Image 1 (tube, rainbow, N blue to C red):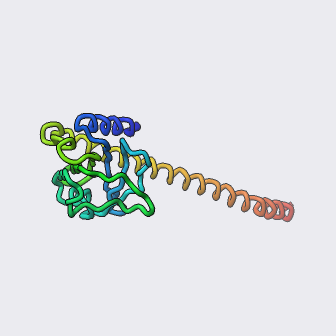
Image 2: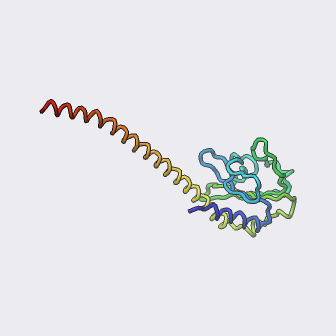
Image 3: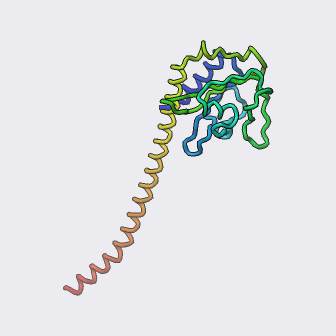
Length: 193
């Protein structure tokens, strides 16, 4: 089961529906407690795993912490906005941004970012009309399932490697013990004869 094509389709549909220039889905990483980009559309440079925000940091982090959607139609005046922490990277400035929390059972799973390079009404995403809470809840559930599947595959791969290493170690030790034991058994057999 590969959810990536479905999530990419959701990003594309969100962009068409809201007339956004870019859409990204950030997932809350359980290890670090940071939001990182897992899927993106309309972005030329791959942001996957590179763009990160702590909970409460920047607009995305604020939305993740508060679990409330936030739209800003003039990002130059937005005090909570903080550009992504990426050294030496320049991005085209975003004029309008809408961040929507992805919440599953009162727990933040991630954040959807819809952005536009133009200021004002063009990026007024009509979130209340076009993105009902059940859609966001289903998307949160898909992301949660994708994350669990990825963790399961990773754990399975670790167990497989560990089993192979253990099997080869046991085989080597068995071989190393078999040779001296064969000599000892042969020596005892000669003494008894």
